[in-house]
Length: 274
Image (cartoon, rainbow, N blue to C red; front, side, top):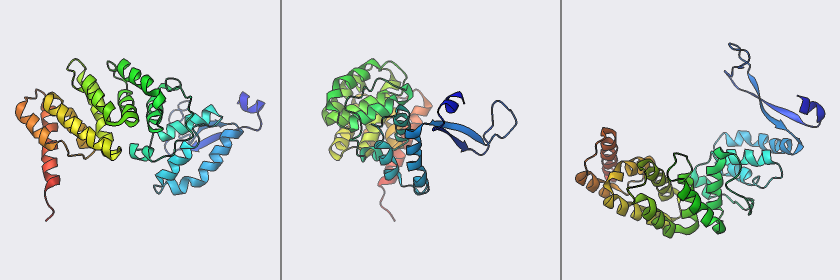
């Protein structure tokens, strides 16, 4: 409140949330909470957004996220953070259709809120920042032994920048290496599955073939492929999956279930309509 008193041109955005409870007054329904401090530039953005809310509530996602993409080079750090947070909600297929000309060319993807690092990485790849290839390769390499949600973003960005060549290199360096933790390889397979569904056609085709080759060479990855490609409703791995299931014994019943479920669903989806 002191800051507001010193800057009378500023304001505070209050949001009403049903069932919101004020932690300072347990048992009471405070209804309103302080969502943001608004200086004039931030307030101008909010005034631009609010009239669009009714349209966005009916699913006009492309227009919504394009507006936030246009704010990526805003002079206000708070507004840029807001834009990143909103873009982080978008499906990857929506992100690929955005005009990202407002992404600052000199942006250092390694700085800022760690929780927003994945979206900054993805945007660097989608914006075609080829000059960041070495930074992204280093980021992927340095994070392979962690359980952070950055691996998939690094993998996706590299493939966006360099296509099937990058996908093959990632497969060789990480997916085909039995010294890399299984959870790490599954995160990379998650990025492959998303790109197989939403990537450029040539890239999608290459990723599906690379995944098939990897699956036949490393059948222990079958549960990860089943989970990730199945989640994307991509049944391109059904034949390789069935072969992996025949030639490998899965110790974990959940893994065996995932593989069998993928094969069964793939067969169901391939049946002609009656």
